[in-house]
Length: 218
Image (cartoon, rainbow, N blue to C red):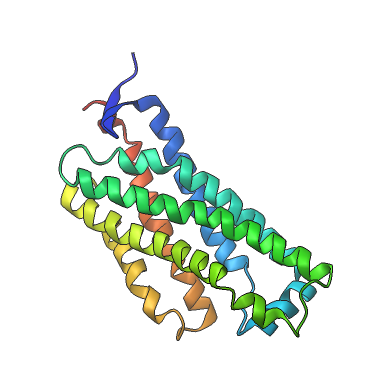
């Protein structure tokens, strides 16, 4: 009979946790790869030029972000399995907030594909792109997506420190990634994109310890 662990207030089969952990790492790697692949732009006009001249790379990043969303969402049970008693409430809250960010990543990927389609059909041009970029609904979506990722990561890091179920370097990596957010705009492009590796390291640590054999023996 497979081992089980108490998660979400119910028993979760431990034989699914390695799969969830693997998907978490896959999603984190895809998120990092998509971030590196997405061409940087200085303003809306520059984004329009990038979509026209580097449409293939733009769409490749969109597909990878969508894959990241799926992997991270399916990897959420592995994250939450680390909270047995201490930090359980904060851990569940971090999971809920992170899920907003994970789903938002899929929405961002679809938005990228939709934007390219509009550019290719000349529905968006240099004259009206500022009106599109200034749409209030778009701004709310983007802010909610970014807040879901960073706030969820912050809560997860604090919850893991309280739970003590992983080595301290795991939550520290997550918290360091959150702390880099205010300075990414002033860093060189490569360093700004490289900060996502801290998130990758943190999620990899979470996945390793969620799938560890000793957790199945608890």
